[in-house]
Image (cartoon, rainbow, N blue to C red; front, side, top):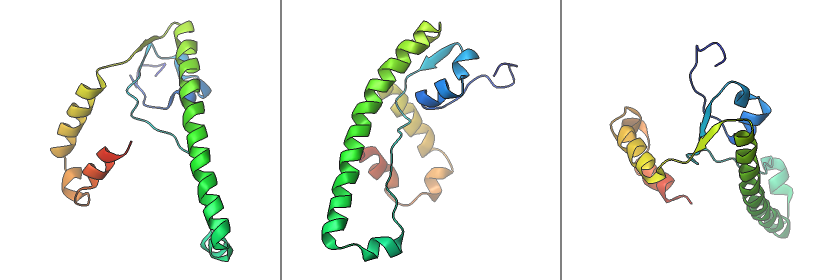
Length: 128
């Protein structure tokens, strides 16, 4: 980006700060289309060795972690947005509904739409 070979980047806000992309960019557009999450991964051998109660507790902890991560992430996004503004970047939020419609239309005309499983797009759109 610094040399002008690349004129944009698409990363979660924490990555923009960590990689110092804010030093070589002029603006950030908050489309909210990138979502980070944490996943607990357990090997089948370990999972199968757990009791039903242990499995249930692990699942409950996963949901608690997800909720906490979502709340923390929202607060952190606000702090990062303020940081980027302090660095002189223009931070804007587009009409997300218009963005969504444009992306959906482009997808439906793409070769990807022909190869994805039936109704996968509907399932993705139903995700909140």
